Image 1: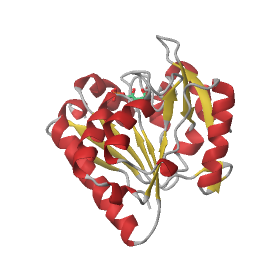
Image 2: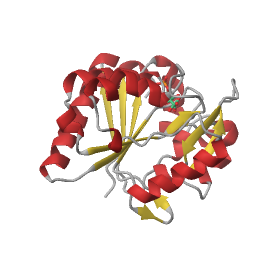
Image 3: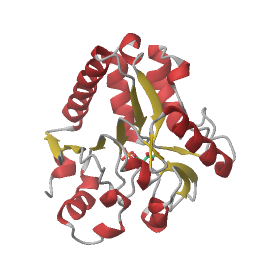
Image 4: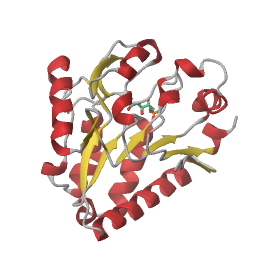
Length: 242
Ligand code: 6PG
């Protein structure tokens, strides 16, 4: 059953608050059922706002039912300001004192080829597999104004259809190496949620939703989980051209 839903909020604050509220109710659901929730966090700046609110509004106990992974990582050490893990650790993981055994980070400091392979194997060790791809319960995604998601960029869109769970991408401007989940993993997930804020995203969101312009060159356009469970959380500015 297709369950594509779009949620539009007046501003970034109410967008993040609504998403954090949805996360908390999902957590409760899993905790009551005694199930472990395997989620992949997104990187980038929008996520930082989510982590801040989660650190204020959730507790270590609630997170004991959550195994944490990342959708992508910059190939930098954890204490580097651009480390997705490093930022999450500082804002959320350490302040809540989350159980380190439940945190499965991408080691941005390691050699990318070996780390992409290692992380792919780690995912298949802890997560159920389908057609060779690990199946997450929930993947959070950001969206670049160039149509990238995770760290798959339009100029490397061929990485989307890689048969591996993880690949090495490169930022089109800085050439920074990134490790990213592939399309096969994103579309195998039971639930995928885009969280998008700001009018710099409005143009690409319209192209993707309306299949206009260069939509078919945008990796984000190909996010279409087999579960049909895809959500777009947007603030007014991001959704203003819809
Ligand atoms: C990253 C991301 C990336 C990000 C988007 C949106 O590591 O950069 O995972 O996909 O989510 O670029 O980033 P903003 O939230 O900063 O707009």
